[in-house]
Length: 494
View (cartoon, rainbow, N blue to C red):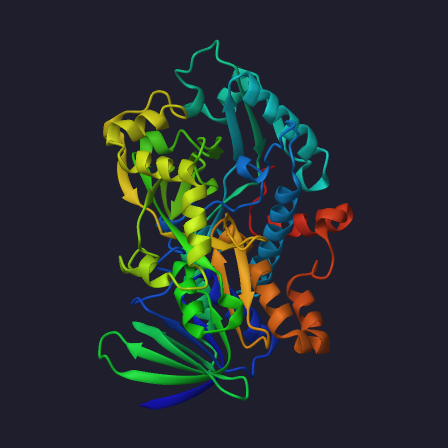
């Protein structure tokens, strides 16, 4: 068995690992970095274009980011944070485009207006209040609202065609929303990393064992899935960015911080239309309200998608349940993830989330006609024959202990790091890829704190000019930042 020494080991070939690798290679080109991917090429699981919504999550249209409290008051705080974090991603991508290290923006990001659409008096009142609060903040000042059917017909003709004229409807729009092909983005980031002499990529390789050395480094055993030969990598720092596969790897690492974490896997499917006559009539991401009991990731939306340069329409997602943690994983993933430390939290979540369980069962039982019937809320004149069903990627929602030691289900992303900063893992789902840059900055701040204080912070600010400042509190900084990113990434609509 051979042993390779590296400074950084990235486990998983998705957008998180690619982003962290990119940042580290810029901050210190002398670092030796290895990336391990279990499939035969990178960005093939959740990061792949067909395995996620492709929404540049900025809080513009996602109604689950602006929940109502028990008094009917809309809280926009989460949307503000997500929007500011997405701006961080746009800044790094702009920096790389300007330096010729990413291709033409249209190869990975395209302008796609973000809209929220509702019907019924109560929902219209909710959307109006949401717009009033959001548009008053500089992050969302471009947001438009209308409850005029003639205006909405101009914004989204497919959605309004054939609709009952007496139905009360409303929508909001932000014209510079985006559709992101995270698969293309990630492949280009990794392609650029491969130009570095000290970067190595191992595909068709799988991590299966960890040993923490006394000096803080990690011995990580990696198996070649084709030859079955094992290799040991000794790494000073390990990042687990393996999507749904990050949880079992985190558990395998044995760090104390992993105790109590569990996972709730949720699968998804899309209705897909590639008929040019239909696709050409819709250019937007139109989000509605989630059904009662549905997980936030199941908010229905009718989306323009451009994946590998090919336009299409997607509707969904339709959730389902599986015991796999990865699309190309094992049906034993969930069972193997159960341990003494997380058994109680996982059982508690199962008992206390019966609405979610019932919802998932009802989703699985739907026929093609049932799914198209749901689509008619957003496209009244659609035909069953124009749409086909496609599998989306796997998501593993976080289960963690609450203050009473029981379990709670988290719908978001969370960074878990060892006390000594030698290993970190990113768990969870939405907003996921859209805030990858901010998530990886958190890895740098927690696991490379000394280096950040001794020069990395200044280099990072060259890539991300707003670093160290709060965009949600600085209208002038946002104006300068947004003007540059929209121009560089060709997202302007004027």
